[in-house]
Length: 292
Image (tube, rainbow, N blue to C red):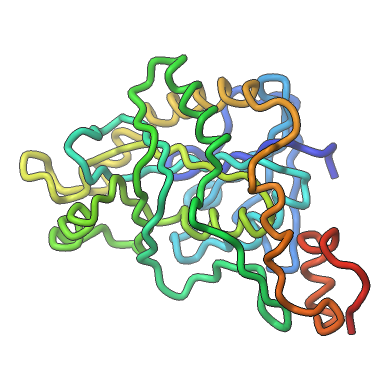
């Protein structure tokens, strides 16, 4: 196991390795929730220890609904990660958000179905606060770093998380626009919920590849359109992440760091032994005695 790392980076479509990461160690983990998407690559970036994980696995092997989100976030927690930056390819739902722009959203609409999005259950109940699903402190550092590299960045906005793997119909795309949403993707909602339960700060660096299918003057989104813009997006994302990390020194003061403090409702004495063992990394510091 490598030394404790402060930062995690989740690479989405087009970002399967972290450019600039040095002294890299490959770490394969198993978790109580199964295997993560791939091995973690832990190294040094901007003077800090960083763990990188390819969300879809190297070679892009996993559908959005096949990703083991619980294992991915648990693995980051086991590595000592306290802040996660998620890089994601998204479609724009607003005229003013153009392909190759960067969006740092601050809200979600969940359109997924049947994906595990909590570590809890099996005798342990917790209800985290999720009104503000992204870490504002981490998002601010990403916005500042984006400005420093002169990326066209939009701070704030709503990310619609759809099930996929098919892209939206035109009717769906226009419905999401009528809701005031900003971008659409297929992966980040579960990551954000699980990060909050793990008391990990989480922010999305949404890299715009297309206008989904609502824009009548643009071709409807296809894999060819997305792939054509992924490489340039990945270069921009790498520069922003490298610039954001040095801005996040010191202890965390955001609510993410203590999200479970008052969230666990189950009497510790009533939590089954196996459930408590599985969740110990997450809840151990909040429990005093109990167990069965």
